[in-house]
Image (cartoon, rainbow over all chains, first blue to last red; front, side, top):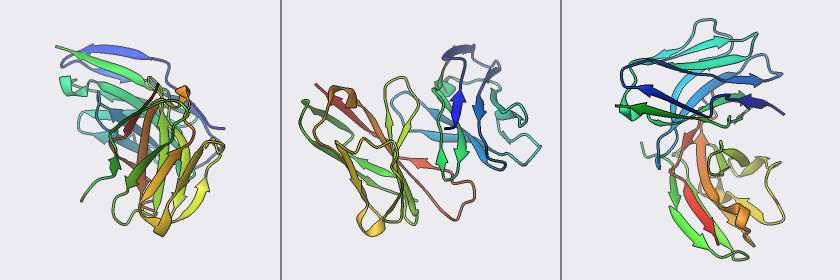
Length: 112
Length: 115
């Protein structure tokens, strides 16, 4: 079964600073997608960013970018210019067929 | 475009009672997922439907959990009888089979407390 590791259960960052959340995974598939989802307190899960495994270029969405290392099976999320609204649980989710396997999550707190 | 709808949002029951959750996916989304999210953990897939057929129910505790998706649209998830360890948020998500990434769109969830 696919496993996903997010080694930082909790992190904090000062507003306007940059933070990186790590994720490693195990998969036997050759082509797949990887996702980062955000779950704010008491609010629903929303997609932050996606990466296609066969693309070498790292995905970027405004202040969010990834560092994807396919050989190392590493998929970290960088948040630049952190804002108070970025406070949430962040889940790494590699695709496995039509399913996702979610990591245990990293709780990020953005401090004023 | 309306999002994934779920009801109820909150439910409190006693152990050994039964409970049902309802989900209405995004219009046109053929694939529907039910997840269980225990506090402080990532979501765990319980069952996946494509249209009205089951694709994956390998992690569904079939002795007490059941789910159906009649007519390939709405879905219900039932627990009977409930145990204390079933206390969790139950998330419904849907995705389009025409999208290669299978991006999932989530509902707000149903928070179940079993006492």
